Length: 173
Image (cartoon, rainbow, N blue to C red; front, side, top):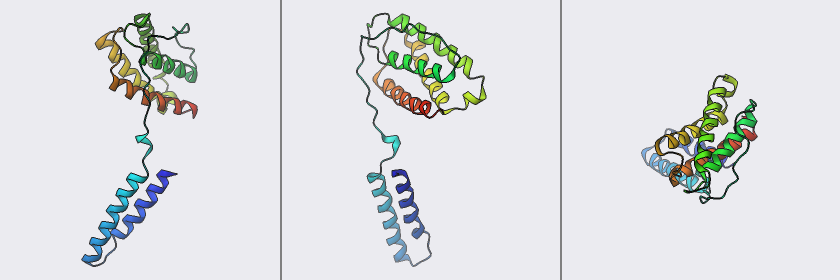
């Protein structure tokens, strides 16, 4: 709804800017257009500016007993995402952190290796966003190892992607 109002306000303000009239009216119209655009940006923030809450890192978690693929995309994507959320929230010195990271990296590689072969899955927004998140987390493990927790900036980005993945999976996208 807010996006529609923003688009309508932008269209209404730019229609008058391109009409042929005198120089004095053109300046006035430009000021109206600029002020409308500025006001709509402030009053109608976009969805992209939604704030994601990054939870504190914790040493306490339940080590998963189910690893690997079921070969059902929705189930596997939700499972990989859940394991990645857990891994992103682990603090330095967490119990079995290295085992968790190794199992997760194998699961992520298996997931991408299997599902990227299918065009009907590889074209889904949830898959492309999950693939991006997998690359970020796998790159962290490759560069820093399994015992070093993710930095705050990387965690924030990953939690934003996890939220997008969850929304896409709920819509079966």
